[in-house]
Length: 235
Image 1 (cartoon, rainbow, N blue to C red):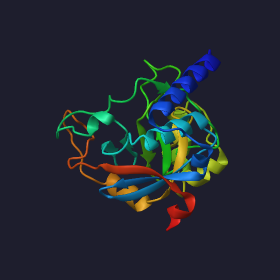
Image 2: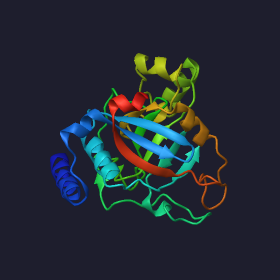
Image 3: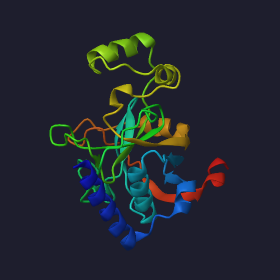
Image 4: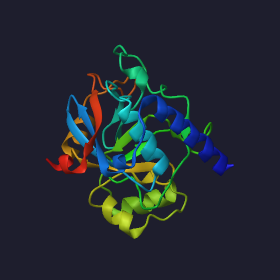
C-alpha cells in the first residue's frame, strides 16, 4: 500500500512539474532563499527526504510561495507558512486550510529531528490522518526552546510514552533547543542555515487571540522564494 502511495504521489509531482517547472539534479545542489518583510532566511533541503525535497523545490520554482503569509506563529515553538489562501486574506480571517489537492507521504528519518531551525511539513491531525501524511505546501520552521535533561526525562514519560530521546539529540536540545515531542510524527526535511535572527524576530511578533488565533497582528509575508547557489547562501 505504501508503495502505491509513493507511485501516485510521484506521478502527481511529475505532472505538476511539467506544468510549472521541472525539478533538475542541479536543484539538489542549491538552497532556498526566503525573502520576507522581516529579513531573509536560507533553507537547506535534505536528500534523506526526497519526496518532500522535490515537492518543495517544485513549489518554489513555480513561485507558489511568493506573497504568502506566515499565518501561524507561536513563540518558543514555531512559525508556519504555505497557505495560498493567505496571499490576499483580510486581517482577522482564520487561515491554515489552503493548499494543493494532494498530500506527501511521511518520510521520518532519525537523523532529522526538531532542533531549532528545522524545516518540517505541517499536516492534519492523527484522527483524520493516521498515516501522518504531510500537507502538500504548508511548512513550519522550529524555534522551540532550550531544554534541561530533567525536562526531557519528564517529556519522555508524559508525552513520548516511554520513547527515549537519543543522546546525540539530547545534546542539541539542551544547548541549541527545539521541539522534541514532534519527532517521528512530523516530517523534518531541511534546516535553516542562515537567518536565525529573522526566525526569532518573526516568532516574537504579537499574534491574535481571536478566531484567527496565532495569526500575526501585522502581516509577516514571504515576498519571494527562490533557489540559489549554495555559495551565494553565505554572502
